Image 1: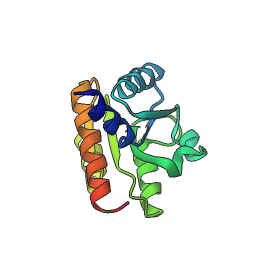
Image 2: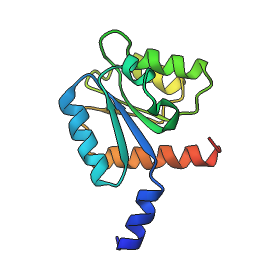
Image 3: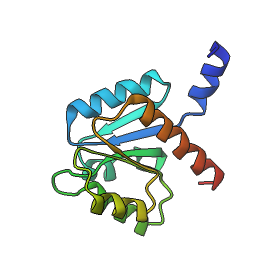
Image 4: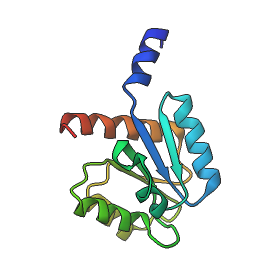
Length: 137
């Protein structure tokens, strides 16, 4: 990738918010995404994300399924009731079919099992951002 296309990618990347109660996952994912040119914000809980300023500015949400208090699936339901078009990529160490089906039925952009590859996450983000732009969100 030449310098010009890298600058275009960074300008077109948007804000990615990561909500995961595991600090090591948040930090590693943030490092990966920043190295790919994304602006990144991290949150330790769904409640912290909901109370944040970046909520409305977020272009894609990377969300853990199981967290204390409010789960990722409950946050997805809440966002859906508010007619949010925010693409969500779920990440989980607990990939059971019921949760996967619930997330997919509710419109998740992707569902990745931890540990996931950096390439798989970056591809999921690109697809989610592309889809969002197509629908004019």
